[in-house]
Image 1 (cartoon, rainbow, N blue to C red):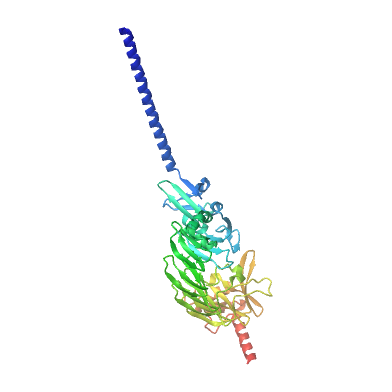
Image 2 (cartoon, rainbow, N blue to C red):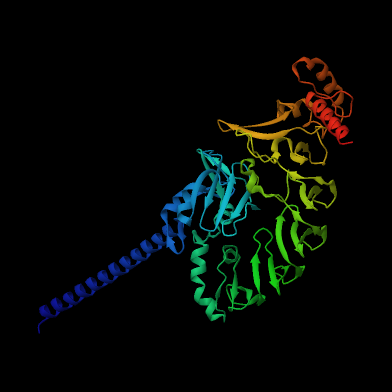
Length: 492
């Protein structure tokens, strides 16, 4: 080989090496670019919110969420209901209407009522067939956005019986419905050594709190859903979860008591039945030997179990829009003993003796009349003795010191009017109570003078009003009292 050939060979080798270096550099740059692109895409994915409902990504639900500046997340009640297995309607469940300031969501086992500006959710268990509602509270009230009702994610969990978790570092929201979770834990229950889950709707809701009510085909207990550890031993004939309190009503040998999730006995297992009356008042209805009483959340006696009945059947007063028959006008407990009704307050003080034949007016001959139990804006209850009617207020007193022939409701054009009749004359109850100053009587004890003046000025128009402790009485008072005297004289 001569020198010319050797130089050519060296140049060729150098060019090849340079090309290889360029290729290597290019490959490295491509790899770096790919890594950068992947990292950027991962970053973008991390900044894009992802929402999963029952382990399926759901862009529709993501688009429904409204993020407030304080971090609160709101969801539209109607729009999200179908994604969670519910139907949503305007108005209230017990009072169907197109009122868009209220709505109710419904599934097979339960109805939840929501009202604008209220953080109270009224729930009705459809499995039990009761007309009495229970209730729970959301963290914030229902609000309206563009004419639609919105609730917070806390409200969503409670109204729709779901879980909600927000993983902010990964910008991921996960929502699970109760039916999906129950199905997910069916096999785990077998692994934990139990036969099945309790299939009552109230008990299924324990999964939201990471608990399961289980059975071995003979008895019931409560376990931790994650690891199967016992919360309540599987030894009870019946277990019923109380969503409002978070406790469990348990039954053993036909006797009922209450045990908390901390395993502490709150009410001894010695009652024939137990039912939550009102969460805010902290009261339970109990029975022994077919006699009924009231206890508080700690098992202390409020009303002794010696009564024939506690609470009114509100199914007879559907137009009154009552949520419970156990506590009326927020503070009075109707109690019947020896076929006579009296009234207690929520502290157990008897305000009205057992002297009334019934509570409420049941329409019969008057076709326009509707059954009536309470006049809500005035916090009065209709009561009856010997087929004559009067009103009782929250103190157990009669704002009208008289008994009339009828006190009832009429509904025309969707508007409710409350009327009373005395000696073939009809009076508007609300107008009459206004003239008596009933609404002011709780804060102003000096209504008698103005009432007496009003009586004098309106006597010709049958608008007589006076303080009921004076000698002057309104026309229905005079007429009825006169009739009562005549009846007493005739009996004598």
